[in-house]
Every structure is written in structure tokens, then in C-alpha cells.
Amino acid sequence: MHDPSHLDTALIHAGESSPRHAGAVTMPVFQSATYEYGGEGTYDAVRYLRLNNTPNHDVLHRKLATLEGGEAALVTASGMAAITTTLMATLSPGEHLLAQRCLYGGTHDFVTQTLAHLGIETTFVDANDPQAWAAARRETTKAVYVEALTNPLLEVADLRGVAEFASANGLTSIIDATFATPILLRPLDLGFDIVLHSATKYLNGHSDIVAGAVIGSADRIEKIRHLLNHFGGTLDPHACFLLHRGLKTLGLRVRHQCQSALTVAQFLDGHKAVKHVAYPGLAGHPDHARARELLAGFGGMLSFDVAGGAAVAERVTNATKLFVNAPSLGGPESLITMPAQTSHLGMDPQTRRALGIEDSLVRLSIGLEHPDDLIEDLSAALAKATR
Image (tube, rainbow, N blue to C red; front, side, top):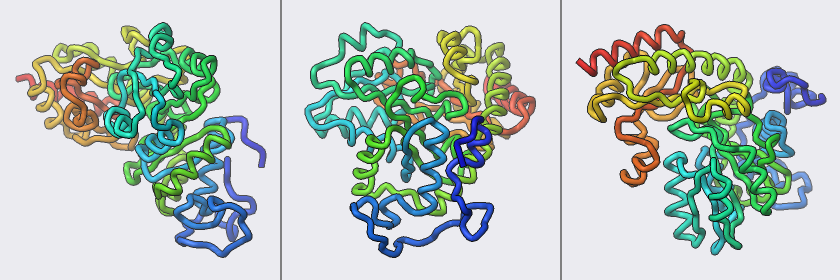
């Protein structure tokens, strides 16, 4: 069938096999490691589970490419497998990367430690300052890396400007769009070359698998896939099945989570025990106007600084009843965590604080519960923690 006009329809129908396998309405799990030889002419085309080309992979690749408006897509064994393989397929020793200052801790560690060990340098820049990008660019600069909504401060950079700068200077533009999802933003439409997702989060949406995704041009994806096939970062067929199933409700889930997150953020913004709330849907957020321009919603993530410091913040995270004190995000259950203890624990404390990630910062992933119940839970936890 032709690609559907509306994203909600594409979530259900894009990429599906036609005719359906044995008439099954739901895509079956192809629990086979190897397949009969069919005369394939290249190594990456040989049907073999490690080579990411089972029927379960193929359906996901077609669907994800359609959702993001890309030529091709690739699923991986984790979000970090998507990030690291993409960066290593894009950069070579002696080359240089420009990266947004505030990144997910795992990404920050990879570029400052592993890439540096391989002879690939990274310069962190303010993603809102085009003059800084130009000043930091070198002859060896090959790529620019940003996040659609930063983790955990929910900043919205000058994404259109980043993509235009990269294109004008012959750089590969890479964006981690995990927090936005294709429901809120399609970065390829802004001019980005490669879109990354930790599909563990919203794309799957049920907190039961770890997966990643990469979307872009056919040539770029083929290069990344070839490297991934050597690394062995393959998503197993049952995880493919779960991700495929989760994608079908993505629109419904994300829109509900956006609505609830705004309601919770407004409550916290007026609470006497909260110093600051980071949520782009609030009028006081420094990137609010840009978020309204670029995004179809403000996302299901927010963070806030608790008055009284890290000890009080920890008491809040331990006092909630509905919010589960756990890392990750994007599932049906709301989660609460302190980034300094989880997602950004590997970052040097001084660097972390310089980026604005205080030890008292609490991050919330808003799930599918009723927002009134979430507010009641947070209200009770804040009251108990600040007695």
C-alpha cells in the first residue's frame, strides 16, 4: 500500500507485509537464527539474524522510515548501540565532532572517553549560539550532534539553525530525538541527516525491552548497518515484535503524556518546596517560544530542583507511591529519578553541575495515569520530605 497521509494511520499500517504472513493480522515472531540461501549477492544481504534482516526487522525498518520521513531505518540492540555505531560509522581517527553541551550521560561518556581514546576529538558548544559553532569548527570537523529535547534539562536548541549550519559546512547532522518521538518532531524535515532513538523509551512504550533505532538516507543507513553487523548489536526477533506492537499506540500514548506532563509541571511550578521546573510547555521556560514553533507538543518529561538540596530531593523520590523510583522513561507507569544518581552518574560532578544538573535535580517521566493522581502523589511526597 502507499504511505498513509496521517501519522496515526502510518503507525498501524506502514511497512506491514503484503500479503500478510499466513494471513496473520499481527506480525508473527520469526524465531529463527538463519534462513535458506536465496542467491544474495552481498554479505549484508545474506539472511541471518545477526545481520538485522529477518522479516521482523524488515517490517520495523519500513515502518520507522515512513514515520520519520526517511529513506531507510535500522533497529539496534539498545539506544546506545544506535548512538555509538552511528558515531563510529560517521567519524574516523583524527576527525572532530561538535556536540551540544548538555547530553545524556551515556552519550557524554562515550564521546569524551571512548571516542577520545580512538583519536576523535569533541568540542561541546552552546546549541543556541551559531557564532560558537562557527568558532569551534575545524578543518577536521565532520559532524554535529544534538538532542531534540535535552536530558534532563529539557532544553530545545536552535535545531533548524544547527541543521542549516551543518549543511552549509558539509557536516553530518545527527539528532537524538528520543524525548520528542516522530509524534512531536520529524528532524529530517528540518534538514537533519540522521535521527536516533532509544526505542526502549517511547517508541516501545511498555518498559519491557531495550532497543534503538537509526533513520536517514539509504546510503547512510547502509554504512551504519554494515558496522552494526560486525559489532553484533542485533535486536532479537521477540524484541522486534514487542517494539512493532508498541509503535502502534505511540500517538495515543505521547499525546496523553504531553497533556499530563503540562498539568504536573504547572502544579510543581507553583509549589513552595520547588525552586525551579524545567518543562518547555511552561511560559517561563527559556525555550518555550522555540518549542511552540518546532514541536507538536512539549513532551512527557520534566525535571525540577527541590528546595533544601539533595537530601530533601532523595526523600521526595523515596516517598512517592505511584511514581516508581527508577531510571528510564516513556513507559505507561510514571517514573521518578535523580539524574546525579542514575543517568548522569558517570559524569564528573563538577562538569555535571556546570551544565545545570544539580544534585537536587529530580526528573519525572509522566506515564498514562490520571494527572490528578500523580499530583496528589507528588504533593504528599513533597509534604513528607519537607516536614
